[in-house]
Image (tube, rainbow over all chains, first blue to last red):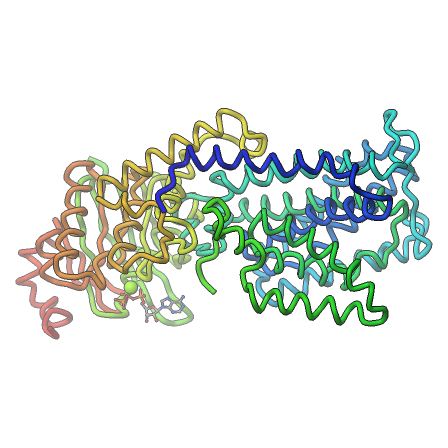
Length: 322
Length: 254
Ligand SMILES: Nc1ncnc2c1ncn2[C@@H]1O[C@H](COP(=O)(O)OP(=O)(O)OP(=O)(O)O)[C@@H](O)[C@H]1O
Ligand SMILES: [Mg+2]
């Protein structure tokens, strides 16, 4: 139990092995598996952003797909309509996603909580989808909007291998930033708000500001994941950001383990790979997918991260109840 | 001499119910003032009104001559008035140490971006408050529990950790809502020692809600007696002991 902070942060350096090993991954992949590996990096960010809000902050907000879509469309619009190179659209997508996070937090701050917040934020996602479909001039409507992979500071972004390295760097930076945040006083305050918002305020912590911060950071990283998704698929469509996407993202959070960074990575990787395996059963993919998710959650209610927690205290989840 | 906390004509009315009605008193540095009264007398409502959790319908609260009556709870806490909760306010999923660290939140330097980018300033601040929190726990002989989730502590241990967390930032004013409830006789005695030490050594002004009359008589410098939202008496423990109105309204029942 008694682990001093020093040894813990030293042991945390081990995590840098994961991206280091991943550097060699393109040697082992074919074009098809490389495409899947890239998606894993995208969904790592999507899941992590979602987990910060529903796991750490404990708000039942389902605006994640809205952030994802806003980021993807921000990137595509900046690419197609403004002619910006993709890399330059990435920060824009992040800021657009963060703004989406700000809007969602406004709902939470208005005292809309629990199931009401769930519905309001889901409606936000659907409203955005309606917007992508019906503002064809800007978004290309149902035909979708392409993202240019061409002129990009000399990077051959048409190659999935090059994309992989770019995605790997972005994902590592954002995961590291999230870990920094969560391990700081801000991360403690985020959990404190979940545990007891009233008591949190009694310690001089501006709870509204903490809620806005968590939502905006979530929107920021999921927005950037949106830009990555846009590049990855080459063209963004409204249907990509519907309820199916939301449910899959939610499953990734739960299978990985609510509120756990390592869990977000595991959940995203596992559930990005899974559909490729169940594809062997045509017509029954969804059923297999659903059943496997259910079984994992029945066996491990705290997700895959709970397996890691048995190996090392670093992975201990900040979930006391349930 | 100006007082640390000055409450004047404070009232909280909930749609007709006078939960708190025209209550006034003062609190000085180093003073322990007990607030007693039967269940539903309005003691917790008084705390809520002072600390920003209940909106007063009338009255004023001066904290070191600054009006705080319409400030939000976190602002009041930042100004140096901190409280505990009758039902306990620990964060169950955070460890004991982390709970105490949240009490030092406002004293931890470093902006959002310092933290995000892992800048030295933020990292050092984090190490510093971790050490400080550990020392505070040591003072209360709770350091062996530092890495235990707060939700795993016994009720008595939780009360102690909540007080450590609340006083970590060294606030000049402390409001304790039944800190000794559910404690064993020995632990109650320890709690009273802690309270006396805070006021005696650190000069903290303390408002204390407590039902156990013998503890109140021993620990408090002055006592405010409430019933049905109103103040019915005020004075030193001796004065209160012999007050007819108090005997009838409150102590008489015992
Ligand atoms: N938010 C509220 N809305 C309506 N009525 C309230 C509210 N808070 C308190 N009351 C009422 O105000 C009265 C005083 O309650 P309060 O909690 O202040 O009593 P107390 O003196 O702390 O009692 P106890 O010793 O049982 O803790 C009670 O009748 C209570 O029902
Ligand atoms: Mg009470």
